[in-house]
Image 1 (tube, rainbow, N blue to C red):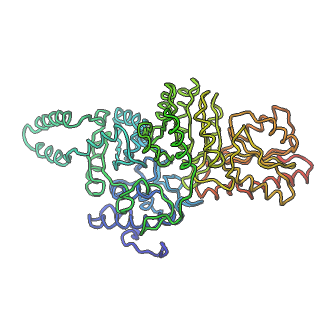
Image 2: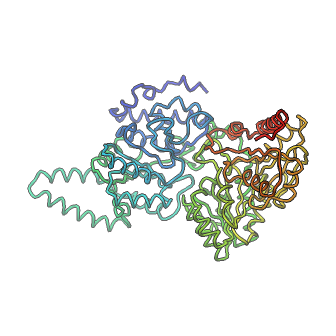
Length: 634
C-alpha cells in the first residue's frame, strides 16, 4: 500500500481545516467526512485500534467541532475510544502513524497530547460526572465556555451515568449531554435502557416547528398565552405518547432524535442547546461502523481490531488460541455436568469468551451491561441461594466492584467464582486498561483465594477446582492472549518448583513464568544456576519448601507484571523478614509505582526489564555488586 504520508486527501489536507470547517457547505462537509473515513481505514488497518466506533461518529465529531471551540469549550468523550476524528481535527494527523504504539499517540483522550483533550478517559459511564464538575468550576470561576459530554447508549447501562444525570439535571447547570445511540456498546446492548431508547427513536422531529411557532406567536397580541397553552398541551401529549420521559424528569431538556450522520441537522440542535443555558440532552442516532460494509454488518467484530486487509476485512495475522476462549470452552463443559453453573459478565460476552456459553445455555447466561458493581452483587445473590455463578470481568473493570467484593461477597463468605480476564499488562490500550492492581486489592480481602494459571491446562484445572470451592470467594487471573512455551500443568499446591538451582531462586506466577524460565536459561549460560518456582495460589502462605530454597540460596528475585505495592514480591519480602530468613539480596521485578505506558506487551516487558534478558541482567548486576563490594545488593 502507498505510504500514508504521500496520500492526498483534498479537504483533509487543508492547513486551515479547524477554522474552515465552521463555514463549509453541506457538500464539502460530506466530502470531508468521506475523507476522514478513508484516512481512518487506511491507518487503523495498519496499526490496529478501535474502528467501528470511530467510523460511526465521524459526522457527530465534525458537527461538534463546527459548533464548539475545543481549545476553550470542554468536550468529553465517554470511554474515549471513539476520539480518532477529534484527534485528526485537532492537529494530530501525524500521530496516526504510531497510534497506540510505544511512545506514540494514545487511542484515548490524553491531556498530555493536546489542550483539546480535557481529561483522561478509558472506562465507561463517567463522562457526565466529569462534565458536571467542569461546569460547576466554570460557574464558580465566572468563566464562559460550553461543556459537552458525549456518552453512548452502551455506557448508559452503567449506574454511574444515572447518578450523574440525576445530579446534573437537578443542578440547573448549563451542560450539554450528547447521547450517541448506535444500539451497541462492544456487544449488542441489553436491558431496559436499550428498550427505552428504542421507543424514543420513534419520536417526531418537532424542534424546528416548535421554534417557528413560538417566534410567530410572539409577534401577535395574546401570543404568549397561546405559547403557554401549547406547551401544556405538548407535555400532556408527551406523557401519553412516550412511556417514560425519563431524561426530562431528571431535569434535562430532551432534544431529538436526530440523524447522527447529518452534520447540519446536529449543528442546529447544538446551537439551540447552547442558547437554552440549562441541562440539555441531545439524542443522536448513529450507525456503528458507518461507511465500511464489513464493520456495519459485524460492528462487534470490528470494535477493536488488529492489523487487517481493508479490501477483505480479514486480519493480516491469523488468530491463535487464547485464555478467554479456553476459559469459555471449559465453562461450557462444566455447565454440562452441573446445572447450577451460571455465567455473568458486564457487556463483554465475546471478550471474556462466553459467546458459546450464551448460545448453549441462554437461561443461565446473564449480561448485565456496563455495570460491574451490579454483576458482582447479583452474582453474590445467586450464589447465596445455591447457584454457582462464574462472574467474568476484565481486571481493569473489576476495580469498579471493589466495594461489592468486600461487602456483598467476602464478609458473608459467598462462594463466588471470579474469572479475571486481561490480568497484567494488556498492551496498546495503555494505562486505563492494564490489569496491574488486582493482585494487590484482592489479596487484602479476608477469605479471598486468588489462583494464577500459567497455561491453558492449568486454567482448565483451576477452573474445575474453583467451581467446586465452597468456602468463600475464589478468583482466577489470566492474561489477554495465549500461553507461552510453558504448557504443562503443575497446578497442585500453593507453588511448584519447575527448575532446581543453587545460586538464585526466581519466583513468578501466571504467564510471566515464561520470561522467568527464559531468564534462568540466560543465567545458566553465565554460570549462575537458578531455581524457578511458580506460585499457584497468591493468597496462600508461602510454602516451607519455597522458604527453605531461598534460605539455602540466599538470593531471590520475584518477577510479576503488576505494581509494586501489594504484589507478591512485597509479600515474600515481608514473610522472609518475619521468619528471620537472612538473604544476601532480594530483587522485586515489577512495574514499580508508575502507570504502565501503551505499546506491545513485549515492548512493555522490555521497558520494565521484565523480559528474559532484563530479568537476567538485573540478577547479574546484583551479583556483580555483591562480588565487587562484598556487601549485599540493595
